[in-house]
Image (cartoon, rainbow over all chains, first blue to last red; front, side, top):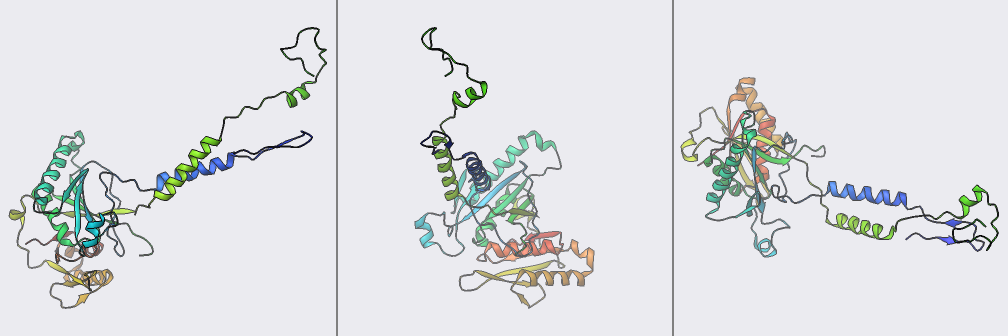
Length: 176
Length: 167
């Protein structure tokens, strides 16, 4: 891309200085990499609840938790055929790690099994010897789903002998 | 002209060339080809610009679950418990209304609920009222957003024992 021009007399060479442009471009790339949302197994893409005067605090990134995602059938990432016939409040599926649980009669049993497995993994972790770290469930449900889709998650956690839970929501924003 | 390695003795006469002239003339500028790198860089930039979505800043509210088996753990509520009924409102249940126990007044916003909870706490005797159980009783078809709104206002009003009603 460098354009050079030699004058007729061969006196001087004119060329663009590419360095600042490359610097800026790399900075932009780094910004987009950091700011973009990477779809992870633990955190499904969904809209967490937005409340007035949120008193939520940042969750520590410790392994003593299982995150249960409840995705909405009305979400733009839901399959088109599901979204077209979705009724308000309908949940698409539960998601724990890489496991997707379809809404249905077996969902509760699957939720209990996967939460128990997660708790078992934590108990096998040497960090669990630290009694200040209590295992908990994080309910990360889409704000559009009905409570009826979230209640079984809490019941399943209680069934799996999990005593603590956290509810995900948006952090406080000044414009709320 | 400076003597080059290809010159043989006697072929050409080598004249003296000052060091300053040699620097200006005979130097070869080495530069790696930048074009492919810039091409790839722009491809990456365009990719990230098109695919990026900003992540919402998320936080959590703490809570408790009934220990042990749900059926066994569900204990009857004490008479002193404050109950918040959360009912759907609007054409497609997109909104919610809140109703406190022993009150017929229905609230439409989280701020109103917070005020009502603060007043209730004051009427119960200040700090000790924090130990009073607060039970959320949402309708099954109310949106999760409004359930968390009530939960948030309860935590904000500094109630310590917040739970969900079970059947």
